[in-house]
Length: 92
Image (tube, rainbow, N blue to C red; front, side):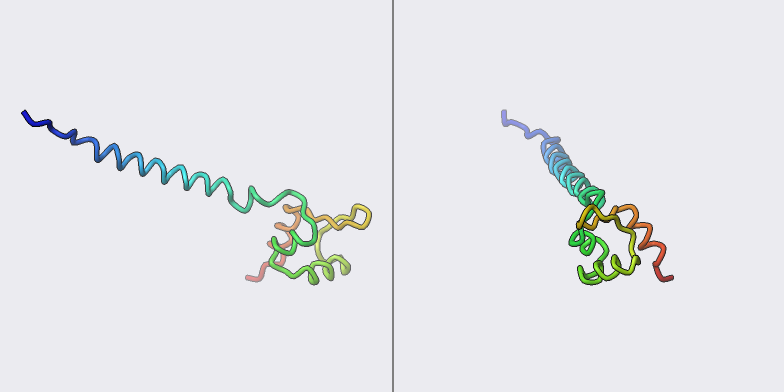
């Protein structure tokens, strides 16, 4: 008597591959920019975050045109304040 292949094996294989893909998507979502960007940024990070050049960030800082704090000679930007600032000046 010949052995009959289990008809559910291909379905189980497909489910396992689907599960692996969902896991990969969840891992990628966990690495979203919001979770990767620290709460406090230096000038270089603020430039990358806002899309402005470092020169422009320094200029805006000296003109008090961008929200920032200073710790000694270090300039610090809070991510949430930058978000609010960018939304405030967003062109319609």
